[in-house]
Length: 85
Image (tube, rainbow, N blue to C red; front, top):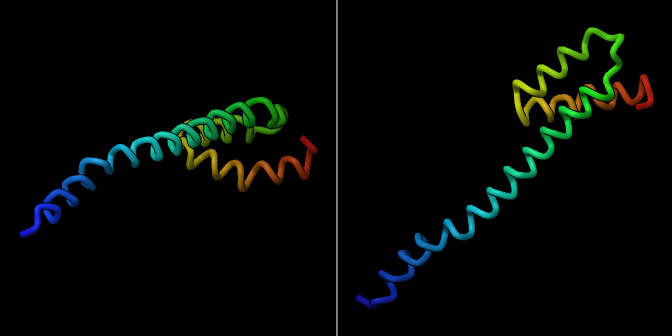
């Protein structure tokens, strides 16, 4: 058996975390920044007159990046169309 047949799979196993951790770290950092941006967006731009403001803030805060994505895709375009902000 050739020695490289044993070394190459071991090298891939050892080097995989070096590649994956930074990629997943940047991805999770981007998701966290998006979540914080949507919390701020919801708290500052939702009209205070509407009872939905508290509901949307809670959705974004409690559901994390999933709630932020729901707000960004569903409510934000509607709010911009209706109120222009």
